[in-house]
Length: 180
Image (tube, rainbow, N blue to C red):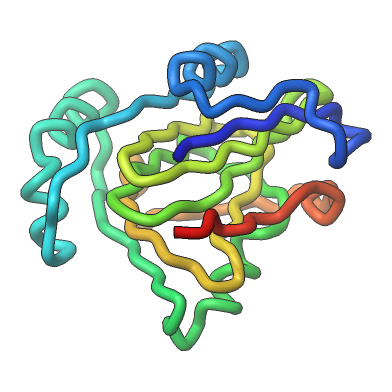
């Protein structure tokens, strides 16, 4: 289940707001320019099936925003490079373009840092999140990751991050997977 916690940037222990209400999550994130939507979920068997199954939604995003590159990224608990992949995303960083992710399955924690607040956004199956270009954030897939996401890029080279050098990500809760 999608879940949002909002903290003051100086205190990663006491949430100012905590909610699983999708409408409230969308409203709170819209205040900082983040797009959050719930899409219908569909059964899919492969990465190719994912792109076919979600073609209408993807086509709408491409038509509206001109994305040039679309792929599916999946990481499972037995992935041999899961620790390296996790570390790549754990430090606060920014991008020159919006970061768009749709969770086909599983979950991951996007943490956004904006105007003195930290927004821990647990995304789960059916969630679309768009983090605006230039927004400080990090992503935690957990020690035993399980997720599959559709990624959309304006830059055909894909994911390009600029580290901020701030250690804030070390002071806020990490992803603790929800027990099934």
